[in-house]
Image 1 (cartoon, rainbow, N blue to C red):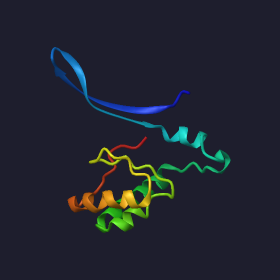
Image 2 (cartoon, helix red, strand yellow):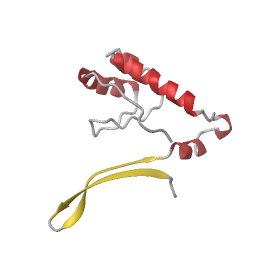
Image 3 (spheres, rainbow, N blue to C red):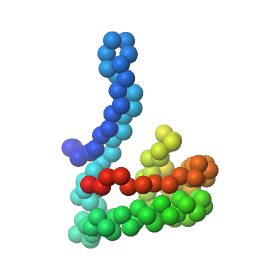
Image 4 (spheres, rainbow, N blue to C red):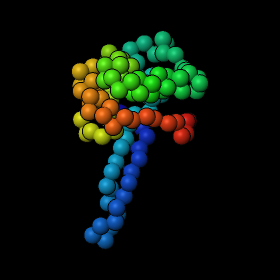
Length: 114
């Protein structure tokens, strides 16, 4: 199967050649719509709506309450955390991640949007 994805790489030069030091890849959101149980019910949101949803999540971060942040995720989520290499796929694991992460008092900013 072919999957549309986005990738980012950070390279380092070692032992006379370029090596991957960090690699992130994820399925494009559009591809997830195509595999939804009923794609006809999927709603395409406008940029303004998407930004509003981001700010709801960001506001939940500002509360420093892991339950409020975890409540922003769906019943079958997939969180690939910023500072953990463990995928989180349910409420309890997402909440557990944010218990520690919120101690850093994180806040997000949209720098670019596509």
